[in-house]
Amino acid sequence: MILQTKTVIIILSIFERELIILEIRLAGTVSESIVDGPGIRYTIFTQGCPHHCEGCHNPETHDFNGGRLADTDKIYEHIVKNPLLKGVTYSGGDPFCQPAPLYDLSKKLKENTNLDIMIYTGYTFEQLLEMAKKDENVKNLLYIADIIVDGRFVLSKKSYELKFKGSSNQRTIDVQSSLKEGKVVLKEL
Ligand code: SF4
Image (cartoon, rainbow, N blue to C red):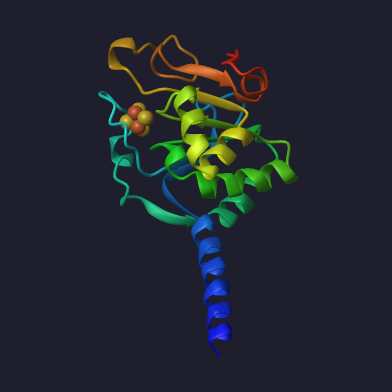
């Protein structure tokens, strides 16, 4: 009887974990964006950001209890219906605050489509590498990404001349080349 109870608890906890992984807290989505990376992109604005950059354009995305919960499977189904998309962008908020559901979505996209994954984050690439040593979910999301625009928005370095980023301290990084070479490799877009 004790063994049966334990088995039920284990099954339930696996089930609960699956549910947690599949749900993401969103600020919103844009089905076709041309301002969040190259080509036409599906953009996911995650809810929750710890960075509080001065001059942030999306302050309503900072609250970790704001936004709404969404099912990543439904987002996936929405994305794959659009043949015009070149890729998917995770913006924020900070997507690396919810790495598990985004990795789950990214994995499905990589397995079944040719869409690339671009991520905006307030963390630097070096910080992400450090975080990845302690957090498997961060590591998974980092290692599956194609492009990362890293670093906080710095108001004094704001420029309208920059392509797909807000301030000149932010870098557009070729993630796979950077991981392979063990140093940051920039990407021209
Ligand atoms: S990281 Fe992005 S969303 Fe977060 S405060 Fe900075 S600019 Fe705003």
